Length: 521
Image 1: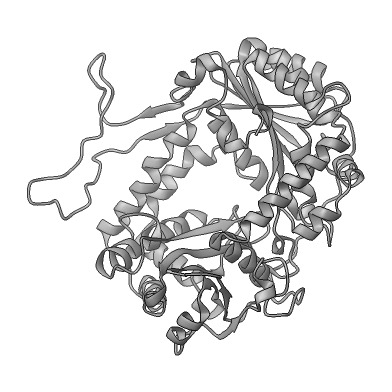
Image 2 (image 1 turned 90 degrees about the horizontal axis):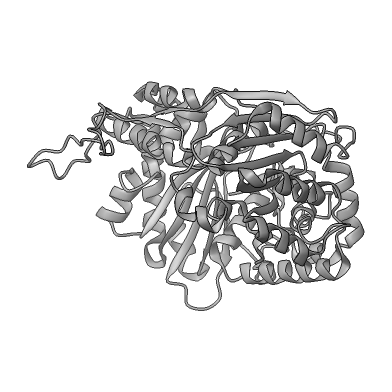
């Protein structure tokens, strides 16, 4: 993978070579934890652990307090919204452009088009070849990447603030003038086909593809964002050109900038660099409701020895902007969020059914799912599934203890500051505010919301978003061994996928395109 096209999750570690070590602590927002430490010492969280209490999870005596710098907003002459967070601790700067060009806008019959378009944008422009882009980025110690998820696409990069203008020149060129050169398109197309082929041997990918089709059906979330072998093979360069022209427009987009730059200076440089990017807002897609689901299960045969069954169990969830996001997140943390969760304690430590199985939410702009995901031993799949269902029912029926609630709240709060430890991390989290319409103070207020979640809030969230009556289950397993174990469990109708559907790209049990469900893990 070239330096210019690294995925967003790798970008925070690729600024300039001289900043690699610094980036881990660069631009950190203010985090306070307990009383001030003596000069020259870092603050340490004291833990309330005493001799004889080693069977209890230690709790911190104080929690980090996250406080972000103020967000400044302005609009460029072409209609592009900009939000800036000034962080001047180190001479580093990150850009994160959010565009309404996600996989939700893939044309019917052409899944993967949004993703392929984003992937190709750094592969050449009218001024630069792919090699020239890579060389120019390397010369200034910068990085640049484009990508597309379901709800949005992005173009992002990081650089030393002294080289902002050079990065903006590259940024604007890739954004406005991608040429989608035919030879590079053929190469990227082949790489995508190889990736899709490799996914056919990965239980997690097989289960994820089948689940989202079964759960979301004809909803825009019902297809795999990377496409299928057939759809990718059928794509032409002209399809990418057209999608880029229709969706990548300044109006309806927003640029997040975090780092060592002043507002007036940034606005002047952005007007100069992005002034040629024009266009009306892209057409919107009307919201589509996910139809009610009937409880059902799908078993996908896994060729060869199958010592484990990979499981996805999904129930109707919530959109990312929901007021229930925080209490539901705490509930899922208690259920299966880590080593202190009920799944870990009971199914792993007590029963030995699994090395790891987890509960989490996939919350998007239009719909969501509450998910249980992981692997269990083939010979105990039935017992493990029974145990998972019992744990869900227990969380729905009885309030959690204060100790269990505190551990879950602390797990969420203590992990938060690390996500804001770099300029790129801050930009990504603010990009989340852009995509899902969250208020500017969302992350500042997040800790207070988590701390206020009560046992009653957890039980209410579990009752609403862990509805076993609408449970959709997908297992990649040996059906001959697993199916008899599932008899009598409340999973609804159990179907075994036909062998030709094992790629996750053809019929589910021979019924492709029936659109029975709509979401995607």
